Length: 419
Image (cartoon, rainbow, N blue to C red; front, top):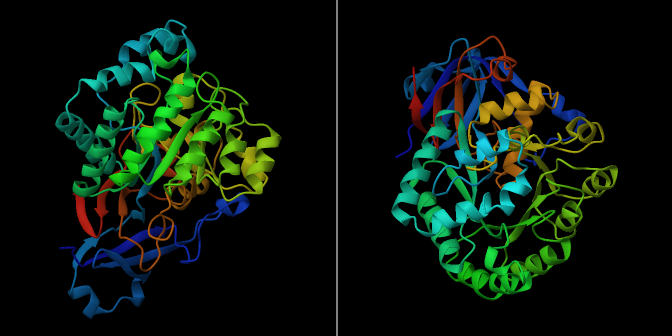
């Protein structure tokens, strides 16, 4: 049963937004609404009130579990809108290959990358997959993540893709984190289909998608539309088929080149297009005239040594930005959203306020959760984090490396605390 909680003496309660806010974009991302010396109340798993401490009645104070947040910042938990955190094993051997100068594409051609993960997952039990992923989610929560999207895509066969998605479904039922599930059968073309990619696309359309639909295993569909993976034409073919089953698109786009991923995503009303390391003014113009969330994955760019997405240019032209971890064993082996906040500032020159919007309300939108997550708003799910003592939110991206979260509240219950 959810607890009634009151958080008192908050140094700064930040990311307060009206209920109609779906995204924060452009220069508006520089402003972060806050209350100093505030309180926040939680009832029945939801945010039930907030304000200045002098507005708090003694009667309300006495009827709740009280957390004294003196000298601390309180904000909504992070939303991580792009992860692959269900996988079989790590790929640290490929890390050494990278250090020796091999590119992402070269490692893939040698049987590494996504195909390596797929081969390992085929022989991994569902129970082991679940246990490993559950532990990863618990660790992500300790660093402040309250909602997460998890993709399949390390299966690449009917049986293995369904195995992954069933594990994600089980995690949805058991984990305290809010989870969205994405079918990513089109993550790579398996080796035995390289000479005939259309045959694998037919497998996705004629067998995988109907099976996913019959068991209601996915909220979204994703395609890796990029150099060496799926073309815009192939991506459209898969998305057209997925639309018949009500699956909303989320696209891997423009990680490796200007390959049309953004355009095909917007054409199919994708909820988000993710990566965007290669982006021209053409793609920016397409995004400006859409409802699609540009999502940047700083961990992958850093790990792979890829070009940095032009976030500053995108914001200056009025776009919203979401940031996500891309937590996976090959190109971003960390689900620490505090690190993503820091990388947003250090690599992309985002202001702390911009990184907060990008990892809360905008990331919630990229998961279809903006009505229930991502801000301090009465009636939203009480996924709340309380920091360690700090003078301002600027300390969060500044002091990278340490866990600066002391208390995590998920669904209105204390999930983890050091207090």
